[in-house]
Image (cartoon, rainbow, N blue to C red; front, side, top):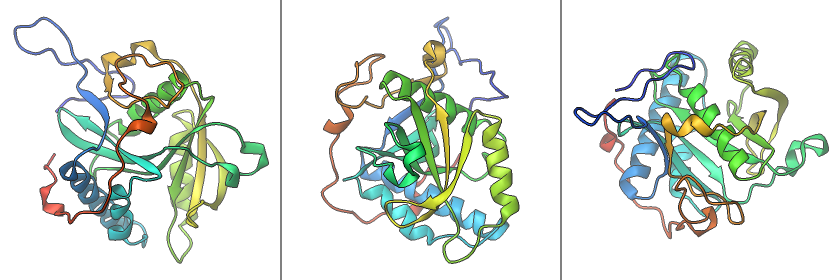
Length: 243
């Protein structure tokens, strides 16, 4: 496993090669096994939050969204092959519900979850670096994220304040709370896009750019061409690799 401290990260060199490679990778979750691993991570994370802080939306329901790929592309961040974070990237995001002041094209991230035990390891910083760079390469001015709030009760103000303060240090700005297009209560944050040419030394990006964007850094075919799962298949949460 590689180590992250603040913004510093030294890529690991394979023995005898004298060359460095990116220990982290961001890629779509194509296979049933990868999506099952993401589902298990989400269940672990939400159950952990429920025990530590608050009641959460049904972990099984949220986890199952990673099999429903018609409107979103499930992505994963891997550390030396181990899934440490997963999220949903909108195929054609509609951010009109954010309000007139926040309308406009943007990269929309939803249902972002990190593996329990990753707090303080730099995963949020890595994801911020990747998302802002990816948005810039896609020609989008903003990255927006919706954080799911407690279902059926108020999320403790202290917890929301801690989250927004932490993300503010990473360049995110809170734009308030609202209801997503799926009817979920969410906290909304955004960050400006920013080109980061050296990021490929840290994170290998295998996520295709949206159709119409310049394809670079080996991003592959357009995002819209990624396959859509025809149906949900049974999953086994025990299949997730242990970090």
